[in-house]
Image (tube, rainbow, N blue to C red; front, side, top):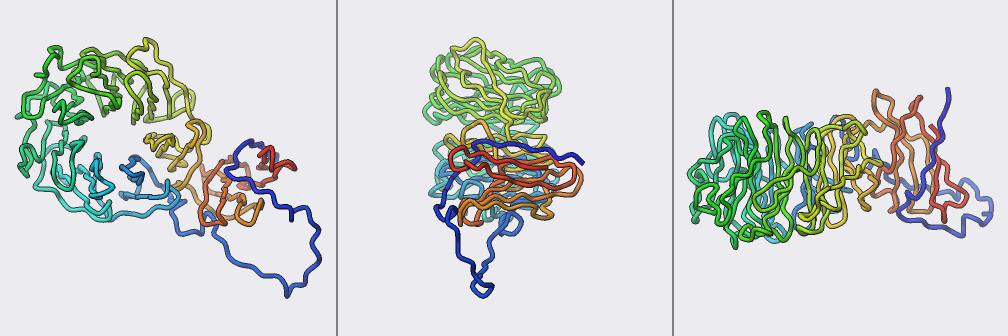
Length: 463
């Protein structure tokens, strides 16, 4: 059977060249040899491989703690080291619709989840960083479906408001200091189903809350000033803003530039992603909306920057015709007439539901389906997998050592769609990162390093 040689450039994080590699060692007897056990990708006590995992949500708390939601096992995981090691929370058997962190998470360790529990919509709160959860108040609503949740930007240690969107209305906790759930604005959103809901980043200075809604005929962007009525914003008579005629909408979400200000028309800019009949990405400027990205189904949206300059990431529900799930635009600003999107897919594994999140310049993408994983990109262009990988590590097929702390391992998977993997450790096996996958014909992969590996960072795989 034919084997294929693949070549990889520039995939090394740390390159160490030992002079001892070029020194002829004196023979030693068997009595002089000593061995010690080191970790392997399948042996270290981290969930590198979790069969049938589906990383359908990824969010980064203030301070950098990462949380993922694995729908495949109804589990929530947390990582404090960039995704190398994971610990499961005690959240199980809940249908989680959305979750959000206290802006003061680094000090109050508080986060909120909105879940569907039978016929009830509930909000669960954790005050210990996701270790355990308790219910916040009574049921938000009954015989409705949870869609989204957000927390006031000035919330701290139990003081502040929380808003929830359902398929029927919008609700608020803590309005005027009241510790109960009430309809926001007394009800009355134009689109009955509240697909997403969010405080203005400048709240309470501009005192505005926004929602993306759908009434079965069209999708709208709506706004309310705290205790007022919906779409009665000062200087914005055209609210609600229609985002397209789409009777069948599955989901929608909003992201804001850092300089957003609902009180200033020129600073009233929002990006909205829609999954439905008229899917795509819309940019709202003041009171008008323009479609800037025509995508079949938008699953996640992430923006970092100001209204004039920033990076917009779009995660898709499924791979498109180019076999891509994530796109990036570096010019989506309000003054740009034609917005360009570039595909990001090098090294990304999984084939459904790209959940995008960022932490500074680092891009995280959780995926579902075959070879789903927690994917990491340090350069915004190429991806590696740190964990929660839907694969089976059956056996090791090759090992190449660069130094006492850095080596590569090739592993094989001999079941169905699963791929062979190349792994890198730079700390003696304490942590691994999957750097490449190989579709082998006979469930085997080998590794060869270039003779000039220390300078050209080139390696080959035989599969």
